[in-house]
Length: 108
Image 1 (cartoon, rainbow, N blue to C red):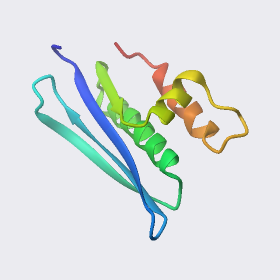
Image 2: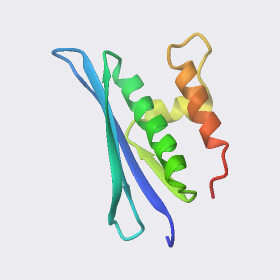
Image 3: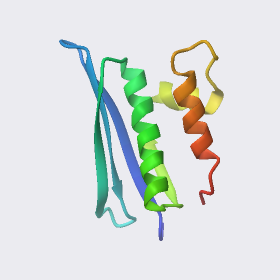
Image 4: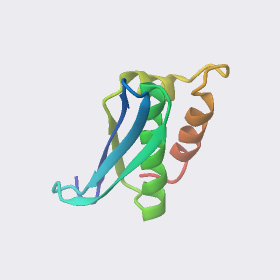
């Protein structure tokens, strides 16, 4: 798709030390590398790492001026919480709120 950028994100947790991280890659419509990111998160759940990956990708896409973005995550739980909503009492409510605010920006 001409002019579109694809971003794949992921989050991970090392069970032995409970340290988490997230990252993502941006590629153009031909699959050429445009950039990426990696972030050390410290101690958090795998779900939170996945959500941080999505939030970080949206923030970076905004900073880079990308407006035609397809964002992919392998976490159906994270995607469902973003799409369907998250109860306010869940630890992830704040980050999902931040993700949804970024989603409301001028994307194509």
